Length: 147
Image (cartoon, rainbow, N blue to C red; front, side, top):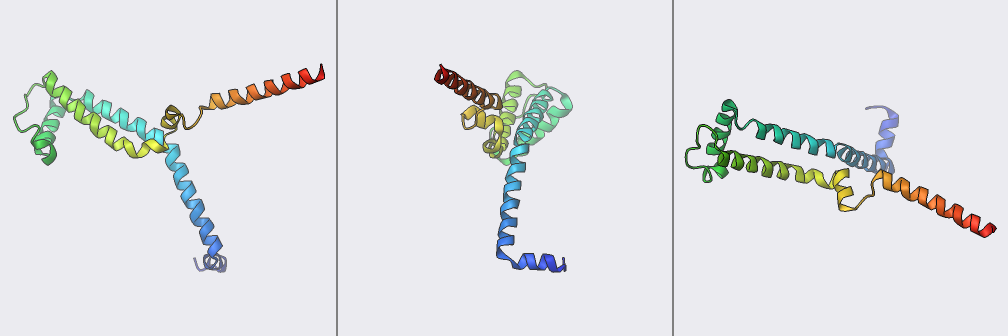
């Protein structure tokens, strides 16, 4: 770090500003690249957790979490049935789903899939289709001018 080049770059305001800009840009690029992977991972993890509800070992963990978490203690104040009944499974699955959605919210603005669904970005095949359509229209216009 005591290199004269590094010290002179750090003394230059424009070099520091460019470094900050590039760092921020690359950070958002990485977030955007991995946003869909995070969303898929959250969905798969949630599906795994819901799949394990009926397993007695996992159900004991769920009952402990539900009865000892201060926010959920009032909802599940009564003793949960030892073999998981359909109503209990549905309520635990709903809680897991709600938590997964809340965890996913920060990644949604960066997700390419979400942006395509909202119509903010066109899918790659649509963009290529528009280019091809534009080229065809140009060729038709050229052909009609020549006749």
